[in-house]
Image: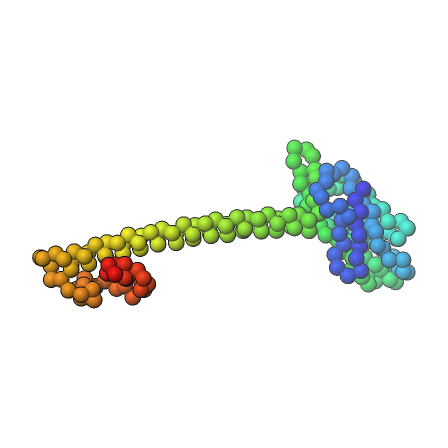
Length: 196
């Protein structure tokens, strides 16, 4: 037997939110108000009415035969009628019914959505960690390539300054001659290139 806790404001919830195997669906409705009027339990499976019965705080159990339930969405609610007019409706979270190899199981929708959200959060965290790892590796690769490029610039500057076949000159002239822009390089690295 499954219990459903009705709520005056908000959505009624199943007492046990774990998936469960299903035969006939027996439900106990907890929280039916004791004030006057008539209370009707209405259930639908995939939009087709499969049960309707009068309930009360004392007579709060309903049974839905297995043959009225098919894979899909099971929805139910309790309506309060006063003088033949519906005055309040107590909605209940849906059940997601799954049929596999001739066995049927049901899963309260809100709990199933909570599990999905938790799984998506876990996947997002794994992806974030992978991106951080990739970003770190990319940053290290860029720094390594920059170090190599600066080492080549240093070698070229030394050759420019000391090779008798080249003009020679200052570091600034070397940069201008070969169109090298080191404006984004730290002063410390520039000193290493110049051999200071």
